[in-house]
Image (cartoon, rainbow, N blue to C red; front, side, top):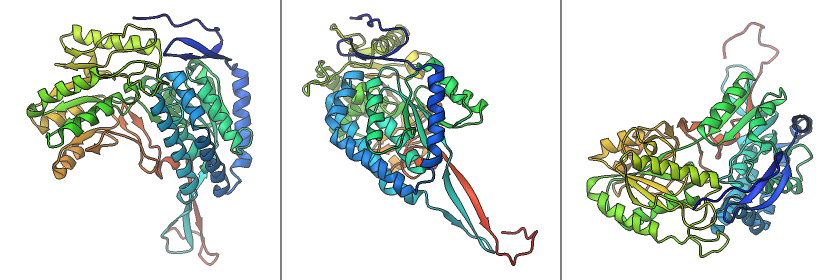
Length: 475
């Protein structure tokens, strides 16, 4: 059943609960002039913020981590109300976000240390220095986590942050701005921008902006990168994914099916690194399809704030309508609908957990990212065909390989065109592990030591003794 999205004030940023379509709050959108003043304030704050020692900046991020743990329930509830995430998953997102903040508070200063280079005379170092005011364009699917992995390393590095969050999670955006303010970030160091997506380009065009990081669709990423490129601004893009989930044996069948269900249904399937395409050998296929169908059909829809609910809504009515359209078109093109495929007959942005088989090239579900609780299951003849199918996608974010023979699993993992591959586990995230993809899934890396190096000036400082003749050019 489809219900109409409630009307909101034309020039406002609205928080709408996708469980019941209730408008929770509205906030006035910034004018271009107000956004320009925010950029100027972030640039001005950078002049002082950059002069602090990395350990001083890290201390602010560390206090933000502590506050996030203290406010865990409040933040989790806000996330669930704004985008429909199950409350247990919202708490887990808050925990992971706090861990990311703590990780950079602890390790960031060491990551930024000068790196000596071998030279014949005198010395040379690569010094990691901040760039300035950065624009972060963040999505709704992980309102806390996506911001934490962008803001934490860059604040420790000495950059200042202008954060344009997704328009459907303004209360999460305000909560994060308040968190960093309460942690001791000076005015202008972390600034929330209430801007419609259509007007973000004016901020990118501002000459005071030194870099742009976007997490979202490949279309949005291409647009932001093009605009930033015209302004010679560094970009990092984490975009869509159509991650393969390759099963080579059934030695741990129950665990493998559980991993597939968790990998596909976490965050109601609204994750770039969801296990979207299950690729199975013939001896695994039929049993796997039947067991995954059973698990999908056992999910209980309801209020995502209720811990007994196992199927929450998608983030919005539009997201639900788009997903059902993809499924219906694919079935009309000849795919087999094993289960699901429609809206659930109740208010809210609910979609039935869905399994598609017999999907072929040319069908929508073959190429497009399915952002919701829809699994596409393929049968292949052997591991060579599995790899070929896994790589036949415009995306290259993550992937998973399940096999008791670890040497075989590693050989297959090595052949996958992806930025990340997990063996015997669905794709996930950890502060100490780099995150990012290739092809239409974007470029650059977040998290780990690599994440703090994206928006820094790797400045060479070469020192010669005064006894070296001018013109001495080697080393």
